[in-house]
Every structure is written in structure tokens, then in C-alpha cells.
Image (cartoon, rainbow, N blue to C red; front, top):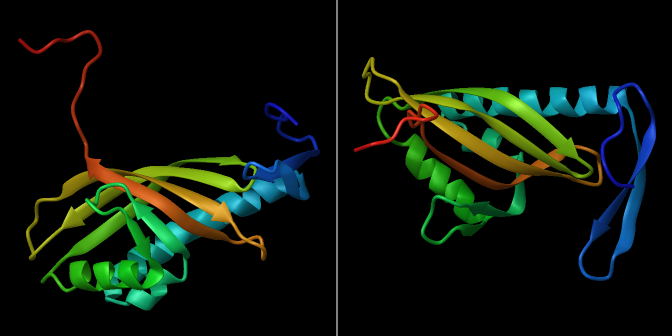
Length: 165
């Protein structure tokens, strides 16, 4: 099925994987399912924030797939164990704290795109660094979600029509 269904209507999404173009499964999608998915993804961000700030790396890792791509890293593809080590290292920095706010969630079949804001403070510093993030999540067999790709970076100021000299 091509395109989007208007809210409030039921429709079937055929989920396709790989070159074989065989349907993985059909799933009835409706307004309740979308609301449930968005709730799950927003809760995932809240759990990530709370787990990070508590120094609980295992709390973070339950939302990651077995393989994760961090676009910001020179070697971007990580196993779940490598991603765990990465977070353990980041979270060991003294006084590091984050606030995570998912701003937009777009769901297309078994993929979800979550764009949001991260406010980062370090070492008791009152100044916050504002980052934007984008994560791609995949729906798994139990209908929950796992993060498979992500990237973040500092917010840049841009005004349409203005040019640097």
C-alpha cells in the first residue's frame, strides 16, 4: 500500500524486507496503534534520560538493537556490547547530565523516526549545550521498538535568506 492513511481510518501496511520483496507480515494500523507507538517511543526517551542520569547503562541498553549505527562515530557500526561500553565511558564523566525531549515522531510501517532535543550539562556547569538528535527505531516481533541508527549534533543558527560574507 502506498501513501499515508488519513487519521481515524484502518488500513493494512505490508512490511517488506530485502531484495526478495516478500512480505514480512501484515499489520492492521489504526489511530490507537499509532498513539500506543508514540507513547512507547516518548517513554523510551524518558527512560533513557533517567537511566543516563542515574548512571544505569543497562536501563539504556534495553532499547537498543543487537547492532547500532552511530553516524557521529568514525567507526559507526557497533554491537550492543560496544554500545554499552561507549555509554559506560560517557556516563563516567563527572557531573554529566542530560534532558531528552522528543519533538517529532514519524512512524512508517515498522520504522519510526524520532527527532528531538538533548540538553547537556557537564561538571556542574550551569551552561547547557543544546543538541538535536535523530534516531531510527525498528518495531520488533513483540511490537515494541529498538533503536537501530542515531546521530546528534549542536544546534546551528540559520535564518533563511541570509548569507555569510
